[in-house]
Length: 427
Ligand SMILES: *Cc1c(COP(=O)(O)O)cnc(C)c1O
Image (cartoon, rainbow, N blue to C red; front, side):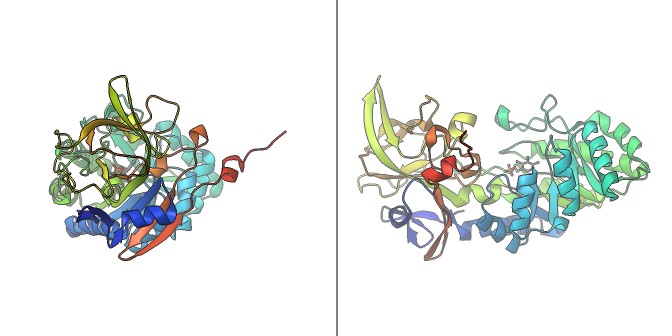
């Protein structure tokens, strides 16, 4: 469910026509719906209510301060993966007691920052990291809480670049090592083992990977407790899939049905780290057609967004629905199925201006005939959109707008040329 809907061949975000936003703020433009953001937080809160979970919004998904603040006001904590994200979480009003710190490559400086900010726990991913964290904790004279991030060796059946809970990826500790690490931590002066963490991959469209991982986690928690550890937290990470193509995503209740019984069995406090599920369908990327051209037997729609705005299609072969913001009346608006042939359309590659053949938002896509000046909406782009954007090719990172009913507000201004060179030092 989202609040980007066509009425009489005009795309609205909540009560605002998207064309108006493009005209007011320029393109390319990120448009977010506040109602949709909050709806998804509430859906998760409701589905997992019986466990009263700590929902730590995954800040790497979309870290905009206004969105982060909205999340905090809706009751979430934060999942951060770096010192930079911790800084952002604190700026947005987050408090350490609701922040979990993940990442395979935390530096000593980041650990110090995390300890000083009083983060709820570090999710530890290697034995080397444990030693480093213990050393930092000792210099600060503070005992730190941790969860062990276990690599449960399950296949989430998602893209190879977003598979994180399978043996052979860099993430987490091999599950057959957890017991011996647990033994080493018994009575540790600086580290208090309090939880088990996993994050299997993303996006996930079946409950099976969670079921398999929890089948391993539950007995592991019992064994760690037998060693004398007070295991209070079970963190199942993020990964819940969303609708990119049509209605392919599972409802939150389906994941809850698998996760909640395992949590109950352990008596742990549940931590969730959703990112995409909250913000993915709450944002679109609006762009303007510059040119169309036929070349080499293909029809290209060249528009003013690029892989520097949304890299997911070329990085993950990800599918994003694309449709005109104001399609002409002879075209269905929008189609049920974007992948089947659509009447009155032509097969297009939607590309940007960057000097890379991988610079596309979509390939082999049916779109109505487009002309210079037409506006396009790329849907389900709120997650890993601007967060992964860059200034490559001297491109300006786009503006972001938050819509709330009839109101709209700039929440990030577009880069300027001066921004591009601001940090450089000429010699
Ligand atoms: C990226 C990430 C998440 C968020 O994943 P989503 O699929 O966006 O929900 C959660 N936890 C960790 C450790 C991550 O790396």
